[in-house]
Length: 380
Image (cartoon, rainbow, N blue to C red; front, side):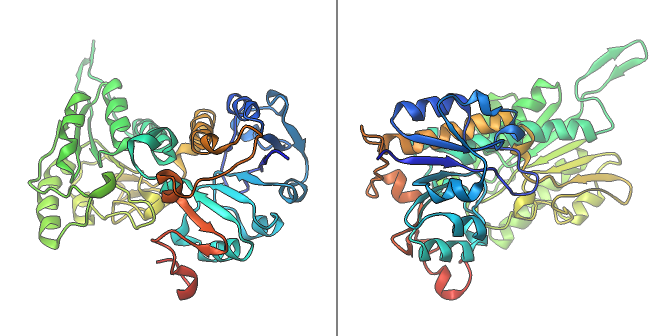
């Protein structure tokens, strides 16, 4: 029998994305896979049930999971969802393993194979599967729009009968995928853009988008496209230079995050004290606690009625149509090479990409970063 792929409703509060969209559904059906979608599951992303041709609609989640060989999800499965899944199935989605030791243990108990999208290795062959990047590009775009809405100033320069309005100064901290999209978006809106990253290799990328790179004299280029930890001395040097630019910014878009780890604290309370009245911080690293010491994840507030600090969560979910389209393509590109002519999923665990993102398999946590978590009682 061909593999039965199911896509349930995302039950996490506020989650509007879905792990499948109509175009990708057709491509998967063409591989021979059978697909079932929970009735109404895609409505939050503005896809109607009738948009999915040749896809079975199932009203009840328990009935959906009972027959599933393969499950596509956005957010990590809850314990209740896992209990409804049949033993030995495969689940693909964001797993947030550092916060879900109990989830991983239950997947081991049920011998569920799980592929964590945040663990897809950052190698050239896996770029089309990199969901962190696809969703981060949306976050960078949305972050600038949030900043523009919260700021009490125009972004572009305007020449009016009342005089010339100077363009806003936008500072982007962290030049990964989200940061680059933030730079491009802020430039399109007409702002003067500066950007900073501890990885000096990003200078060329910043300048290619029309931004000015801030050089603090500290380089922390690390492995896998991420930055290494800074020493205390390097952190101080970084802060001394950054503080001057932070004080002059109208809007700061902060994006420095490392999956599975707390976001580095880059903007101190003292720096916020020195910011201009009416300035704005949009902390896109809020999921990991934020880059600003004062950030309250999920909240927006004014610090001493002077500086607005916005800590949005699940920013990609604010653009659910394109976020779902991009994420569904990431999932398709990950699993489709391993679907046989008969429509069966046959994962190759020797493959570099699969080996890099498999979290649980055959009753054990197999990813090296988390393999000790169930024995210690918490993810390491």
